[in-house]
Image (cartoon, rainbow, N blue to C red; front, side):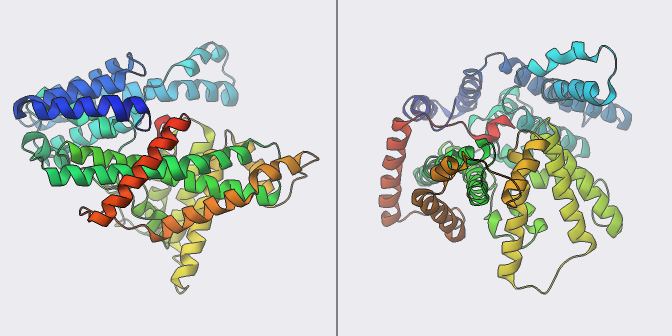
Length: 459
């Protein structure tokens, strides 16, 4: 189910809220668990079994950790990690590994494993796997106490606002709200406002920009101007799509009394790649810092070793986004850029130039992320450089992409990015008038055409 569909806005969400607030407090977590599994299972009911397996294994194994000896705790942690990484590796990476083995090694009989590439990947498995791993590691370290009620832990793992595409939540962040939260009309109203802002980002900015990007990336050989407009459109699309989802998740959480972490802080206004990753997908970056970067030594192991650690972590984050060569290359590129900043940090340039240069680097890297293969990415880079022969049909591509409407859309998107403010928890009457109008415009867009799914549903 998608947040931007009538069935969610007019059906699922009102029913969830109505029953939730009619139930006594002790029963509300149970209703959230049931509703979250229903939300998750409507697309593919079999995916529920994978989520349920990861949830019960992680919950059960963590219960024994505080009272166990060191070796037993290590064994329990290993079992918990394998029970979560096992399904992720099988569903998400087995097909890619089988294909890579056949292409690179040419092992006889490897072609018989091609069926692995046809396995349906459970939506959101990359996100809830990281949540389960952080929980197990935190309990092992003694940084959090294990959950004592399965229903509470099930809500943590399957909470429908952020189940599919984050934000990635730690158990210790959510535990106080799971045990003793206080809902209020003020918090509910503010949650509605945040949800509307995220909905508008998705329907009014991300989807129109995505249509422009699809035209450019779908062309055989776009001319230079069309390629740049398409790339800028995709840069805006992926930001508004993902940040819009995160804000909808935060707003929905507030309606149910939960406080979810902020996931974006104006990343396209970053002044370096390091600053960008402090602002983009914040919960993923903090997860990688606490469970990968710091255990590897952080910045205490010397400049070159730190650069190597950054390179390794970014490759892993690239593969986390998808089992394909282009995601590995995207992570490698970001790792090299971050390592380069660490080894030879640049200083002295004005802030506006550093911001523009960082945005250019990030935008150019999106080509690899958006392309279906490394070869397609190279062809698009050639179009950006004007090094291709667009051919006789390029005039039609240019007519479709280089329009005043598309240029106005990109300008509006850039202005919103430059002027956007942190999520506000206070709404004035004037703001609510604007939010109400924005909501009705979103409903019109929602009813006029089927909204594409969120990009990060695929990751």
